[in-house]
Length: 265
Image (cartoon, rainbow, N blue to C red):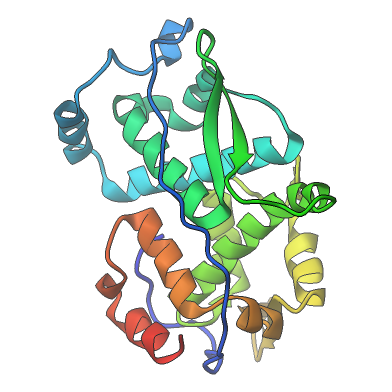
């Protein structure tokens, strides 16, 4: 997610908010080569080799791969499906396997710091992983949390996008952003189901989002803004920190958003 232009529709007012944030250290090792040579990481590389490879890659594209991997892992966790490294390589990393370890480590940090989840290898021979929670959970809450993890992840991504766009965003911009994360509003998602219904009905009904029509648009266009529940349960500062972790930049890199977040902690 990169620094965005001014809002395309009227921005929402400042809202005061608070949120419990999870912060854990990252841990994930590359391991040995997979049996599938075509989709194995390059031969074990030193840190300096990976850094040189990163210099040849577009930072925006690497960040996009990190976002895709976070979403991919959350979907797998939702269905409690063990995660094979070869699937990570085939379905997400693809031609970026020369910076595989960096992408996975960045995704691991986001999973731990934002969602309180850790990627753990349970089969070192076949390189199979699961996501485990780093947070203590009250008995009976596990199922509820498991069922909501992916949705909350999607909601966090949408809220951060809206904030970075200037507190409001056209519906077309939101849908295009989700498509880049392989969450297509016009298709049935294996976890989210009807994505457009989830975003425009469920999140709106829960007061996380507000949608207002943009006057004099044909065909009709709509504007997304934070709803009152989002304003109570999270903060602009938290959203900016979330984006900064993904981008590996200081929050102050985005001057306008940083000043607003500091003024509305």
